[in-house]
Each structure stands twice: as C-alpha cells, then as structure tokens.
Length: 300
Ligand SMILES: [Zn+2]
Image (cartoon, rainbow, N blue to C red; front, side, top):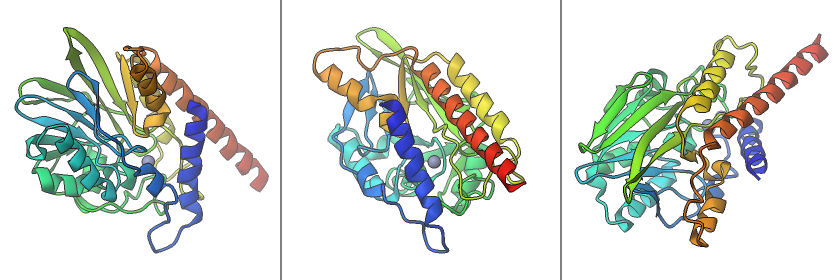
C-alpha cells in the first residue's frame, strides 16, 4: 500500500518533467492533493490541518503555535480555516516551518505568514529559495516544478537546532536533504493523559528529478547521494513513535486513522515507522541509481 502510494507520487512528480516549458508546469495531481479534509487531533497538542493529500500540522500551546508546511498556494485558505475550526487563532501561530521548498509543501507559506505574522525558519538552502521565491537552481527538479512565491522574514536554522514556542513546545530541526538540498524533518514531543510520544514530520525522500538530471553525476548537486545517506541514517536512528510524511498516505495515515476510529486507540503509534520509511527510501534510491547506470551504459 505504501509502495503503491510512493509509486503514484513519483509518477505524479515525474509527469511534471514531461510537461516542461517556460509556463508553469501542469499539475494533474493538485486538485486531488487539495481535496478538503476535516482537521483532527493526531496526538496531544498536535493536529492535522492540511488538505487530504498534503500534510500540514499544527502544534499548539497556551501561548503560541507552530505550523509545519503551507502546502499549495491554493491550500493556504483551507489550512487557515482548519486552524480556526479547531478553535485556534491563526494570529497565535508564531513559527512556520517547512519540509522542503517545492510548491506543494511551501507554496502556501507566503499567504499563511501574511495571515499570521509568524516567523519562518528554514535551512540555509531552503531559506535562500523562500526569500527569493522560484525554484533553487541546484534542485533536482529545477525546471520541472512550479515556482513558489517569495516569503518575508525568513531566518536560517542549523542542523539539530531546537525552537521553543509558547514556553511549552520544543521542536527540533533535522536536515534531511536529497529530495532537495535543503530538506528538513521536524521532531517534537506531545503528551496526552500523562503519556508522551515522540512525533516526527519526515521530509520527502524520493529521488525524483527533472528530465536529464542524474543523482549519480550532477554538477549542480554533487553531494546528492551523500545527502540521501545522511537522511536515511537520521531516520533510522531518531526516536519516532508517530510518523507523519509530507504526503500523508506514505506513512499510512488514513488507514491508521480509520483503525483508530474503529477503536484501535494506538493505531497511529508505530516505533518502527521511521526506520521503514528510510528502508523504502534506500530501495527507491538503489533503483534510481541502477536506472541511471543502465542509461549511461546504453549511451556509450
Ligand atoms: Zn518535492
């Protein structure tokens, strides 16, 4: 099931490469990704506020919240109304963070920042793209994905940095590059009925690119393979009770939610989920490398 979802996502991303041009690449999946989703509590002070096909997570406290990912530009209004539907004020979002700066995860950040007045923090590579807008030149999907709107008031973070919000939230940033050079995963603890769980919002790990890009031999992104390895190692080692992925079905969120609604109260908890995600990522990368090597042999 997870593989099917991953395959569909990769296919969808690759299809952007086919429709390249000077105009914005087509996005056949956007309407499906942006399907409305009723917001819900994931665990403790952590809530799902994104549309059905793109995760956006709100971590709340009595004096300030954190929002992870803004999804598509057209998702921003839905995310804002989901936050309000849960009884929270958008103006209380003090920090907006991001997985990676593709239009389907960062496209809504500019608007959400305007609505909330929140600070945006990002890895140095992602911060540069957010400040200028567009697509980073060393992005494997450069030329094949839609540009993002520029974001004001972006501060750079470093690997392992923790952010304290509202005195109660401590959320840490972990650089997990590869899908983009600036990819970042997020980890924090949420408690419910005196039980605390480690939650990880993992960035995409799929080796997807524009036509002609090679992860095995790229002038614009020469460290791509080492970066992926670093990201897999992080996910294999980090404490992880609940995994949320940028595309929610990749961590089985909807199946787990359904099971929880049917009475399996711990259905979202799986301490092996991050390791499994790393394993899937390794497998996809191995296939991608084999494909690139085969193509290189054929052209010789
Ligand atoms: Zn992406």
